[in-house]
Length: 251
Image (tube, rainbow, N blue to C red; front, top):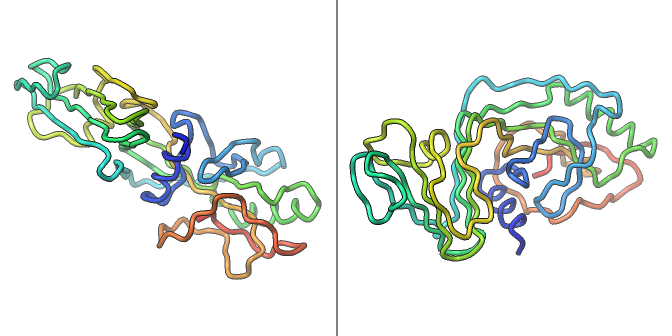
């Protein structure tokens, strides 16, 4: 399976959000696109149809963390110590070495995350239904309605088994280290066989949620609630009738 599929599938399954691919690519509220499995392919923007997004931001900052189960081992060293397991980090610095036990293993940490959402979603729903009826909206299109903005994020994806990355933690660190330190104040000192290596990058939009057109009467135009995971769609759902009845958040 391609690296893009592994990365987007793993984060969607575990975090219940879609993941931006490539991780550093820009994305915004109202971006229109299509889906290839769990990979979002941007194509246009809802502004083209005269819609003005009214954004509402969550004031609470959260953190998102994930690593592939049984896929990553972490060795750490505190400042002032010497560790043969983290040879590229000097004695006076704290750091960690990540050893990837398989290809396409993910190590993801994002801190200071705040979610923006489209506040006028009912207006958006009505517009999309009208556009669909007039033949201007494609059934397979989806829209970004919720967007996670990270103050800082680290994203590592291995290209093969045996890949590794050594991170030096900046500033004072005399205790055990974790994903929070790696996401906010670290720098890459050495790496081997890494497909993606984004370290302590500021201002990424790594996660988002989508809304699509649906004709199922049981489905709804989505509130941003993380609930039990439904079966993942591998393609946009086909229309079952001539006219849609609702809009639904893509699960």
